[in-house]
Image (cartoon, rainbow, N blue to C red; front, side, top):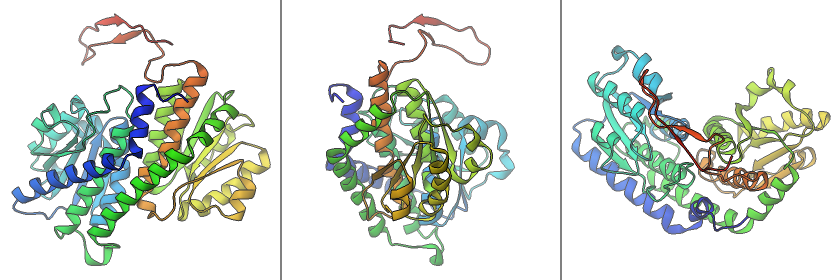
Length: 380
């Protein structure tokens, strides 16, 4: 892989300690600024709203809020939230977090406005303080992801995750969580984020070529399935999206157990299945799954920090991920090999990873208004 492309530069920026520390520090400062202004912090439910990559941030953030802050949390597509969540379900004890790295996603703005009109608290998580979502929300938690300016986001996804973890930690500190639900104190959780940064640096430094070899092996593939559970359900969704966006090939994310109930009939002996399976319940269930894929000779790639004898024997490939992380924090690192895989497949297939498959880009599509189209010069 050539590191000259801006996308690889963004991915490899996650190997820099300052990328992680600046994101932690900025999220900490802006979260504290918001919390210092509100009189009460007795939220009972949190909705995380976004679109695409930002929604997948929310799917990971849901687990952080549940496990760290002890809050009931749900990730909902922004448009669905604004149109289908009735105001009677929202009140002063509801927090709505709108995620949009660019800060310009109209559906997120509408979701935050819907929340505020119903009496809920509305907070934006974005890279830009002076953005539409920031102006719509009552407060903004900044991610420091403004340098990820490409249309296909990578490093800013991880930086937004950091902001959501920090938000969960801060809400836990303010007494939102119940005592019996706290598994670590706030310093330990922050230490885990920093440890994830160290793991990311080690992985990108030592194992990028390992992922490149995988792309060479699967260059004839026409589709990719990515499976994850719990905190990594969102990781699987984001990974699949990036394979689609970069390599212009079919990819789909599935919850691990659900895939066994019907979708397994779609596999073959050419197209790979990726399993995101850090140590925990998912790694135990993956072993059962691999007995099936091994029997029918479906290529499998397991991303795990716990390489058991069974996984080693049954998986086609095992990518050893950094260890020492709580499963809740593994999404910060486990997305990296999938970013590299998507980029590598794009390179092999002759695509610019930021290009679209079509050469007409709709510039204005809004509720029946005329569509303005312009020709693009992207390779397709």
